[in-house]
Amino acid sequence: MSFVRSALISAAVFGVVMSGVGLAQTPAPATQEPASTSSKIDDVSKWTRKQWNQAKAKWAKEKEKWADCEKQAKDQKLTGRKSWSFLASCMTSS
Image 1 (cartoon, rainbow, N blue to C red):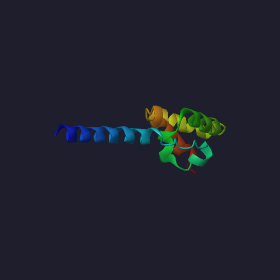
Image 2 (cartoon, rainbow, N blue to C red):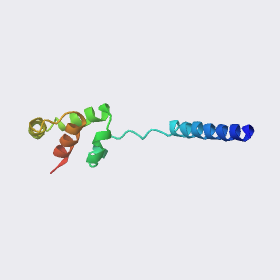
Image 3 (cartoon, helix red, strand yellow):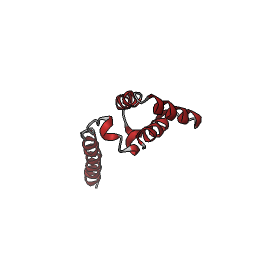
Image 4 (tube, helix red, strand yellow):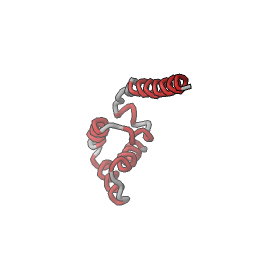
C-alpha cells in the first residue's frame, strides 16, 4: 500500500513541477510600439515603462492637448497606471 501511495505522491509532485516549467517557458509577449497600441487603450495598464515613455514623448509634441489632458488627470487625482490609461484615451480621442 505504501508503494502505491508513494507512486501517487510522486506523480502529483511531478505534475506540479512540470506545470510550473510550462509556465516558466511561456514566451513573453512581443513589445509593441506605442503607435500600434494607442488604438488599444485598455492595454495601456499593461505597458512597460519604456512603452509609456515613448508614447508620452510622442504625445508631448502636441503641447496644448497634452497639457489639457495632464490637467484633467491631475484634477481627477489620477496616479500611476490609472493616469496612463486616462492620458492615452485623452490623447487618442478625436
